Every structure is written in C-alpha cells, then in structure tokens.
Image (tube, rainbow, N blue to C red; front, side):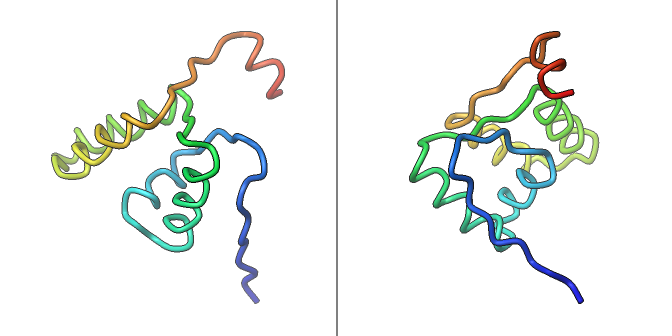
Length: 91
C-alpha cells in the first residue's frame, strides 16, 4: 500500500532536486504544492548542489526547453551556497 504525502511546508524550506524537477514537469502533487508554497513565501530556495544537478543534467541531455524553464524559475529562486556551518547544522 502506497501512502502519498500531502505536505505543504509551514516554514521556508530548501527544495531538493527531485521536487524541483517535478515542479518543472508540472507533475502533481508537487506542482500544485509549489504554487501554494510560492503564494505563501514568494520564492523557492535551492542548494547550489540542486542548481548544479539540474543545470548539468539538462545541458548534458541537450534539453534546451527544460534548461530555459529552469533558468526562468531561477528568477524566483534563491540559491543557497553551502559552507561548513550549514553542513554541520544539517549533519
């Protein structure tokens, strides 16, 4: 039995690569949840690793349309650069 999570963040969250990819594909429920999240917080936050994974993946696959969608989404996305303090807190 598969249990589907229907969680909408109550606090500002770091969006991972899989979720961001689902948002760009307009895959549900990630897409509708992202719209609610944007309405509440006004922007997304991703790590520099998510930026790298998306950029490299789309570029390596020649996915120019997806790469353009990604760049458009970056207009409302803050990229968080990881440092020792962040990594230790996450750990």
